[in-house]
Length: 539
Image 1 (cartoon, helix red, strand yellow):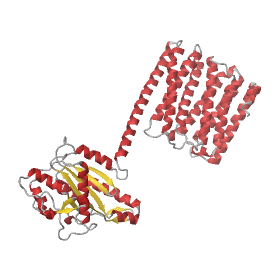
Image 2 (cartoon, rainbow, N blue to C red):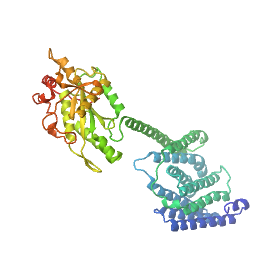
Image 3 (cartoon, rainbow, N blue to C red):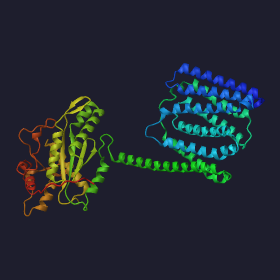
């Protein structure tokens, strides 16, 4: 209300009195806010107080007359410079390390403001001015460009609850409007009364004083989050800057040679910045696409591939163009339901994550490891049956060590079913390969065998390699889930139940055909005909 009095009545003296009243009120409000809320970062508020004092001094010198004109301009320029320092002080903790997109956007907005200022404000006003006057004329638009870039940077980090910061943004905008009117008047592009110029700046300092009284002033200068969706708003400002730059060759046709060099340099920097922004936007889009693909293909609890990604990998490997054996181990945790029911889902998730880590560690880098669902895991590896059996042995041995969970040590073992295509990866449909391994795992769990092999894993190779060798012994074939037969090793003396398994209770090393006799006559015959193992990375 006080600010509008000089506008209605007029008069330099009344304008000066109003200025002193508003600035004094702003300083009192800042002091009360600092005393009441005690912000952790008071430096921005001290700088804003200094800026208000310098503005009052400059306004007083303006009313003295022409002898103090340079002093008034220097005080006003210093006021805006100190205000820019205050903005930098509250923006510094809000910067995120490694995030240059916001800084690049703010710089582009500042460059566009400098380009427009030099073309339409600085060049017409400098003319034949003295060096001191020219320096002052150049200083105001350049500081305005810096303040505009800082304002754009700060707006991107403001939260809904930060009322104090929003009021400061209003104050910065008012300062820019007031200085724009002053520059237009100096360049002769528009006639703006001194009272109107001061009114906009007084609104700015009044908003700063009110912001100091709000409780959220205590968090000014603290860390803030950059809102990604505001990138589109900054992009629209940059688009406007490019439109202004496109008008420069038309509207700035009367520029001198030195001015043209400056404008061309600013225009080149603006275009380079836009290209950099486009490149970073493309990189950001690619990262988002890769992140979305990773989340679609991986289980978030374990970091392993999920079922859909496994089926794609299996289909990719299971083609005629990729000859050679392909083994699939289907793993199910014994006793997981008991742990989950006894200790809750959080502990169950711990167990799943730890079990997945053990499987990944034992399997190594080459095999594909996936969480098939619940407490079921799948290991897909391009190897012969004896290597798949040896891998199953190592996995079972890894499960003999108790899991160190948040509720204490918990013993959980596993049952493993093995299925393989030995004579070519296109011999068995993908669904059948998984079903065979699942049936073998079900049989191993039912009889506490540790692991079991599906008969197709053995018979396929025998049909290919032998000439006149008899079929697998009937005593080694068992009916598994859904009537699917499986071949497994029989119990040995001293075998134990799941949860108490020992390394000696597992199948012997398949590298020796003599020790493999416990897996049955069919498996023994197959092992005697097995060549050197193959290995390779899954595509």
